Image (cartoon, rainbow, N blue to C red; front, side, top):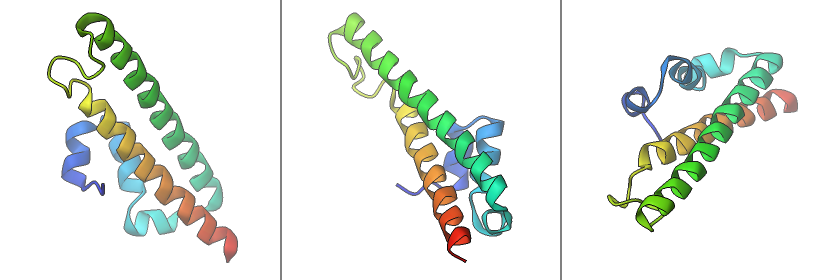
Length: 103
C-alpha cells in the first residue's frame, strides 16, 4: 500500500513524519550515501520496533480474548499500518542508495 502524507501524518509522530518526508521526491534525491545509510538505519529501527510491538500486542490480546486479533478483529491495525509505512520508507531509501552506488 502506498501511503500519502495525510495518512502518514495521522499515524506518525513528528520524527517518523520527518523520515517519511525525507523519503519523498527531491528530498530523497538530495541525500548523500552516508545520509541514506543513516536514514536506512533509522527506518529499520522504527520498523523493527513496531514489529515487536505488534507481536506483543497480539500475544496480549490472545491472553485476554482468546483471539490474536482482539475483540474488534483489528485492535492493533494502527501498529500494522506503521509497520507497512516504515517498510515502504525503508524500501525507498534502499532503492535510492542502490541508485547512487550504481552511478
